[in-house]
Image (cartoon, rainbow, N blue to C red; front, side, top):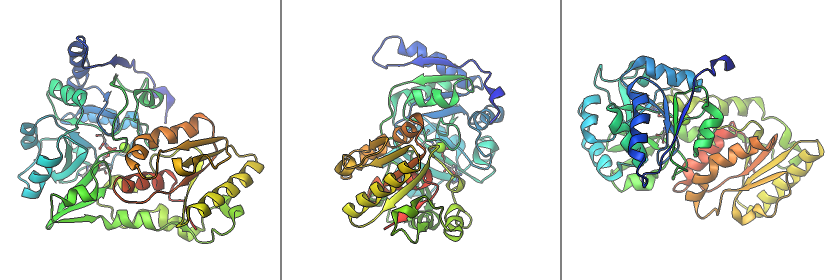
Length: 387
Ligand code: TXA
Ligand code: MG
């Protein structure tokens, strides 16, 4: 990215809704969106970078600031149901029931777009628009005060881990956007679940804060998009028996099968490398925890011998077993809400410490574990060692 682009004066607001000055600050910050600028703000999932979804120039500023590929559409955020009818065409009853149960909340629903209501830069020319109502009072009040539907991808430079603190937004976007609202840490920590409607239910395009089991409680049929499923299950290093081999690249066939997106992803965002720390990262997966721990330590020892700065992303159950330059725990493997909350900050901490070689323990893909593993696999560029 062209560093000469860092020319904007980024304004900052620290907003605490319990304080009397919050109303005035919200008004000033919302003005940025209303005037066609770019504003980062907290949601319950991750910080978003918002702009008026109807204003093509404003939306282009989001893509420029993030360095985001233009064929990847954005989520539109609303603060009340009346806004929805202005931007979408009539939709199925299942969608209505999902909204009643999960909005405001971390569920994004892909709906037929009302022609002309939203900039085509937001939808990347698709006949659909992804919409959600965030469960965060600052976000809801900013959207309401801005008076428009707000297009907002995560407020990180494209390819970097999503921001769960305003500090992360500053690291990536200071000088590239018009304003940042600091409302403290986000809650869920991974992005919203993205679903499209399918016969009898929904198809999950991106796992996130709402789990498949939660969706299943509202609609009859929940499928995981085959593209997503494949992307999570291929890409294993076939001969993982010798830790010394851990620094070898994946065989070309496995790598390209993994790195390339499965045919025609339904959610364009699925095909991009994401969330990646700067060091080379691998996930180590195996049925026996002791075997995983032993394999990781042997590989770390070999890497340290070669002069790598080594990091481990582990769970509390095994974190103390490792010797490395940086060991970060994502909490208990039995409390994956915590892993979701901590994951992106953990990935950033490897960069802060100059870590060049990272091994991560896998977690079960149940509940929020599906979203956590999905993000981990992307962060690792699909490098998975299967023991
Ligand atoms: O939690 C979140 O969803 C955060 C916060 C800021 O709200 N936002 C977020 O936005 O993650 P973004 O732009 O980083 O991710 C949008 C995802 C991408 O995977 C994109 O491909 C998909 O939603 N998407 C957007 N519009 C779509 C559409 N019309 N059809 C299918 N997928 C779509
Ligand atoms: Mg993102």
